[in-house]
Length: 370
Ligand SMILES: [Zn+2]
Image 1 (cartoon, rainbow, N blue to C red):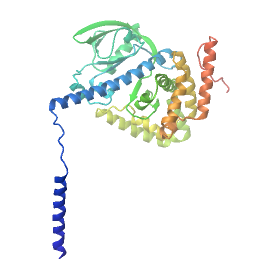
Image 2: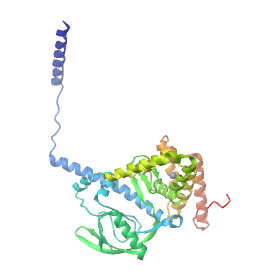
Image 3: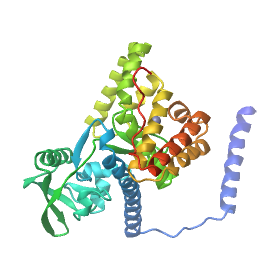
Image 4: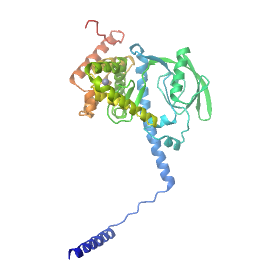
């Protein structure tokens, strides 16, 4: 009996399903043609690239005055013309993590591209701009961004000027540019949407989430704060502290593993902005709050010396506390404590008093014996 009922149930269920599907109306969206699809894809890729590169340009332009005005406070200084270069593969990564073939589809040719000429820096003043290509340094053909950057730096070390051959459109021209000295701190941008930044890996790394959340003044303070970490050699001191605290037992294993992961990623052509090594540091030991206080203080001076607006610091912390009150990352690296805000205000007042008195804008040093 039951063996008979079951198939019958299935029959009625299917019949019902057919009835329901017939009863519900069917809609016919307009058919899309191939050309329109290709056009939309192209527009989306172009939009993504333009957005990412404009964000980068904003960070570079805010960073340049900080790096150029604070050579007296930086341990490593090198000559620069404020030029950001990339081959097509690197440009794809910089353009929001696109693939090289996406750039190919946008008609971007192979070669060494000028990604940006920082506002106020010699390259921009000489007329170099995004969209041009760099063909030669001192008459020698260049293809890779690292090698070209090195050639420019070395030439400037030797004779203060560098001669570049650049292409734009069908013409090429040669110009000689005088370099200027700037803090040697690479500025990188992570695609992470977290509202944060770090300098643990020896570079200034600004996250996309932070760029989107902050005004120019606040963003410039964060760049200066990270530059201050590097000027104070905090990453190096951090490792020394680690040796004393015992983190040195587990640290090297994790660090070695992370370094291998980074090497592996590089080998397969992945170029993460935040290295696994940098991430692993957070697991090994927390960043010192003393480093943070020092970086806030020196960072404010760096902004002041660059001619920036000191109100940006408070603005940045207000955004941190509003947007990421529970973020573990923020809590462990950039806590928004009342002590920190009070110290920040005191430092702003100290700088303004020095400015009014016509005193040099140099941070007070800890006297020996303290
Ligand atoms: Zn910090």
